[in-house]
Image (tube, rainbow, N blue to C red; front, side, top):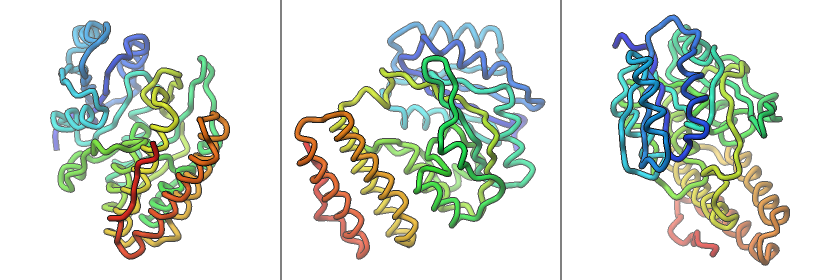
Length: 308
């Protein structure tokens, strides 16, 4: 056990416009234990390094800066994990911000119940207005067993797959070699959390809102073309099906995931008016179904993930 309760890993790349608000929210935590904020400065292309240095100078016992050249969120978070000293680890994106009770709520989830993972609620900020989405209103609450937690995670409604509204015991991550994989997937957090949940008998959830995700049109999540995004979603489905087979996850749990992605494809192609949407949509659904069916016997070798 270290004297640092929580290490907050902040992945930073091209977010200078939002970074001061993010780091200020972490500096103003209502938390009685020692914590550190590891600012992982990835391939700086703006004023982010200077902003980080201001906080390191003002709060030398809290903020730390490390410089990396990744251009990859997964690798950048991994670099933060490797230098973290806290008993627990949280992740914050440099363009988001947190509420003053962020660390207190997350810490109490895992510390009081002696669990390895805690999941909190969040809000989305669109043009400065914070909104609570449908998935937030359906959020789980209390201790849930592994089966229910995985089912909710794969459904991606009652438990979203993001890493930034969760807390993890550091020794737990290290002992199971749980790192973010630089796969060609839509949300890196999905694979990371699925593998983490598979190692936990119980997970604590709370409906308390602690994190604010700032929606912006030029974010990493929104900068790719629709076809590239869909390709990443297919890769995510492929990897999840592979993990499911290796860990004997029942098919009924996966139906939630595959159904939600069907809906996402429908929205992607018909609402965003991608070229030749009907034919492309059919190709995607065909690929998705083949992923779902093929891995029932463990054979994914004949799946073609390219839709370009």
